[in-house]
Length: 304
Image 1 (cartoon, rainbow, N blue to C red):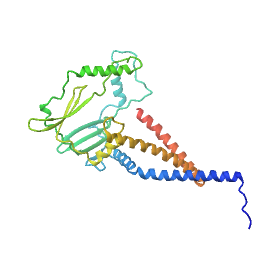
Image 2 (image 1 turned 120 degrees about the horizontal axis):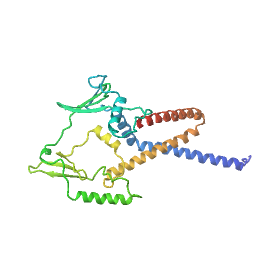
Image 3 (image 1 turned 180 degrees about the vertical axis):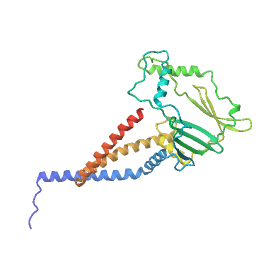
Image 4 (image 1 turned 60 degrees about the vertical axis):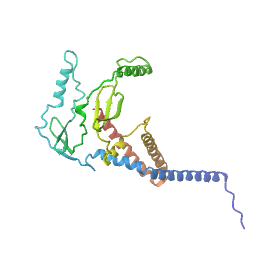
């Protein structure tokens, strides 16, 4: 019986290397699969909420009507004329200021809101043409029975001193003194509940910096499914005192990292498929070109 021929060292090393590579690709495929299965609920939340953001009336009691141009609703001068009038007003008494002809003036749509009967209406309208979008939905109940009896503004005696101390602490963190006064964009907001003389319960929200006070009677109500999903999509950041939101933010980070892993593992698995390299390269090139073109177009659109 003939003895088996010995395997050359170079061939043995090549075989071992190929075996390790196949094992790595196998693990990538498994990890790609199981991370996808584990994150199915997260992906669904973001996918569904993104669709709801783009389609404001889906799964909602609201209706939306596109309105044709109507001089009765519009009739405003063109943006260039309004810009000339605005520039004359804001530069009154200061010589040397002119409109930049290289940047065309633009004017955004106006938003009007009103309530009639049992419905609440919103109108986004082009002030020049009068074309727009009319949205109608159920009125939101306003529990403000206690509003007339309680002040809409209230200043606490100690607020100014406390804000000054906080501002001084902020300035101490800066590398050099600020050029202007510190601006308090959002003050600490106090939230609590009052019980009235007749047992009525009113939730209070008090902006301590501005002194504004808002009231809402009754118990807090749960969000509808649509509003809940949209709030989930917008929730972000790691709060210091909310465990549920902290865990949600961690899940968002994990989802983002998993998206990046899917991209990398997908590229690795594609490269291993020699028959699909050319077609995949065409697809990848088309994707990069379209993403770049759309990204540049959106950059100019958002900069206006």
